[in-house]
Image (cartoon, rainbow, N blue to C red):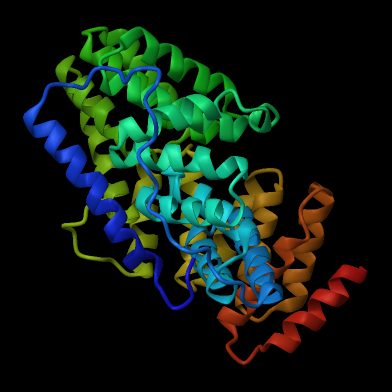
Length: 403
């Protein structure tokens, strides 16, 4: 990634070609026939390799991005990825990890920006296995099926992904989508099923489950469609498309009350997640209140509850978060997640001894908890107490590492 060239501005020329090609094909022609076996990928835009920068600083920001991902803080992760590449545009680990991050449906796919990452990665390491695979997925998501298919077909048999099921699942998933777009029902179903078998992360199975549900509904196989949509919601209760499609299907089946509930949840999630570009932006306080309302609709949903508590932390409502976690801990056995959230809430209040106590409980409940979460707790301390500086955080980290 070039220094002083924002990713968004570098994405526009790439997307212009892809979107124009896809739009013309869609408007003037029926679904394209599968490309012949000899088809080759659309040529990548040539550009000089990014120039190296401050590698140590880039890797530091990359570690912060990884820690944020472990804490499910995707906004901070994206910012740290960008900082890593601003410091060192030739940092290949950051290019690779940001590229895959940008292809993740859970964070809002940005295939154009991902394509830039993978093209830069290829310019630095032409034989890097992620370069071609990531480019193929990004092209498929951008509508360039002819450029994507040969890259994906080659990648799915590459030995590099045999021991990386999560990445192989994304490759197979992208191919299944191309088959679905081309009207290959049986091949698409088989591809989505294989994706589900490969994907090790339960929540990541929601998207192929929704697409399977849509395929079945499109073939008037309504019972199969409902089953798959409910499975999608079970693995990812905040999958807005699953909620919407299930709500529509239930309305079609004259189950009005169930339909209204799903569509109400969908509407709240749209506001919370900012899925609707026409809606007015909401602040952190309002988002936390909407999450409380969402939890009332499905009070047994653990994800809704966890994300409500996290929203309270984002809004710096540390007293509210602490009170809710303490009350919850009286009703249920403690969990590493609740202990982590309590540590963050205590830290935000400036109660470092309380944060340390909650951190110790977290580690006792799960000794494999990564030490990178310590930094997340201490960054919360800085957010709640702006006078905390880098030296205070680093010295506390060193003391915790010795304990």
